[in-house]
Length: 248
Length: 248
Image 1 (cartoon, helix red, strand yellow):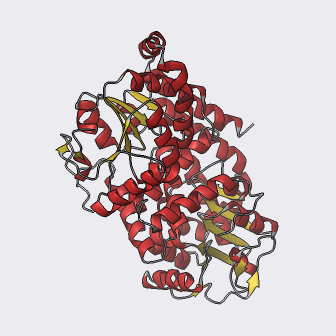
Image 2 (image 1 turned 90 degrees about the vertical axis):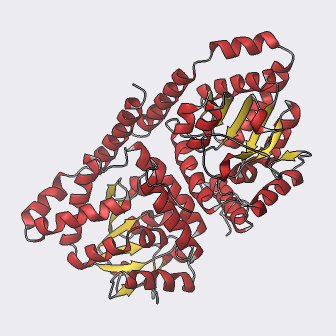
């Protein structure tokens, strides 16, 4: 479909068309499309920009990822479709491993998402051959690799479901969520909840890497001073301010 | 996919699966799935219930529909998928005509949606053979019928896009929107904006029909006392109260 250049929601419409296309290719799942819509709505209520509380969480997340022994970025179909290149770039600069984990898993879809990430420049994508299970979830989402998520101490889970976020926290990992819904189980469960659109979030995180890479003191301070629950509450207030401002 | 009976979001997951199924059948469009997700997010922020301001708008909407000379309910793929039976029942009891109008229009999809409504009990579905165009929108969404939307004085547009809602208002019609986003162009443009999940909204409207059918005085009073903008602002406040309550 042709989107008029002057359409007020052009960027959002283009992203939708891309997701639709990647859903026809089997990279994005049908319910992934619905999940994207939920994200759009919350992003809309944040004014479609990174609120300052999200930027704080993004910086703290980078501090945790740089402090980690085995940091892993978990990637699903939507994440690959929305920001494969940004993910690959962040993984290289930290560095962190990339592991594909799908809610609606089939070997065929795993292969497609892995190949998509490789076309975006990833050189070592985990997930094709899971050899471990995360405890406490029954579905195939539990499948993971020993090299990656199973032994990870810090896991970045963009667009994660609540069950898996909880299982990762129970497994003793530091869980960094990227989720536009500040009330979701994922946001409430994660160690650090980044309430921001995933492409913006990953790009912002990238910006913080050089500054924090050689500064362990700064990293420790960021981690020490961060209060995730307070941060989420402030984001809920930002949504209210936006709503109010629209009816003046 | 099997959804566990005790899953906290069972109803919502079942609806998603149904939409996914109807998208494979060609009744729901790919971008319709994303639109459903947006609705889910806003419904979540309303506590997944009809707030009292929505109930007021629903009663006023029924008053308008009963006062109308040629009331028409415009139906798209998502509306048919979510509540075909409720739409058919409301159309019969008012009575009002049903016309299928699709954002992503093809004759094949129009036929599928019409047939789906007929299987749900509709006896006279307009839209297969449009013979008029609504002014001010360029795409095929402009297509409509003289018997239906083109000559309608009151149009109920559940899950409508902003361009078409604006075009209908400019054409001098009373436009009743059902849209979970109180800030959308559709909600801001419509004469009456019902901010409620579409299945609940249509069912609630049905409840008001017997009470208002033989009471013109009550209808006139409802119409006279309704302030759509104030009602929308109150709904934005309800969302804020819900957000606040989640962080106590």
